[in-house]
Length: 316
Image (tube, rainbow, N blue to C red):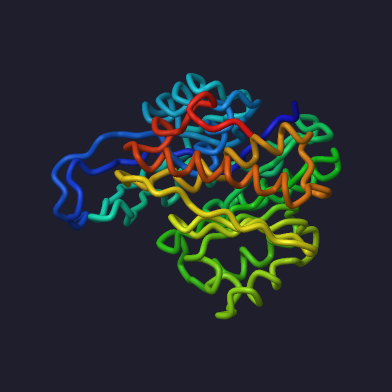
């Protein structure tokens, strides 16, 4: 099996004990391990895949907790570095009545932002491996250039690049800088996962089909378009496959997108880390599996703790 590497932020989500109120009025929180790249690595490991997380954490109790949580999920944490220069990032999350979220981040800077390009080794990667990343750590900081080096090294090794923009505008000084940075990285990726909430913002195009078509630039071979409870669509330049969502009672949407892409990348691991050449029938099975993982995750509270095990999902 190929190995999935994720790079970027691992952080602490503080989840409110009360739903449907503004963050300023929340009295109590519970601590959860989070950060989209860390979540995706855990999602793959919990399904039985091989995954590793590349990132930097503070030499603090929260960093210890994150490493222990990833270790417990089965993630390889040998590429997790620690620093005294900054603390581990924190995010306070407010849950709306429908289970959706608002965020307030504490990272100015946080340890993840300090990962540098000279701390990335091309020797980690092999043919058929997958590198997955998001946009939170593409801000103008050393970690952005660590991403660029990791992407180049994985390509040189013959691996697959997966990008989920996972837009978090509160972390950017300027929304347009966020958009332009994402547009810079899309052509470097083989697989792009994008949500219905992000499509028009990122592309600047209101027409859905035209916006999707605009994403096929550079190395992009497939675009996976997620539509929340309405399901997802797998696009290639030659075909598209639409898979309906699963109706469930939503408790918490935290981690659902990460469960989706993690389950999808797990299936690509079984396909030797290759997207090109996947036919419509197989793509439909892969997206159905990912939909099931995301739906199940929303019926539970938390992020990593809510991610499914393989035996909880339908077999392909």
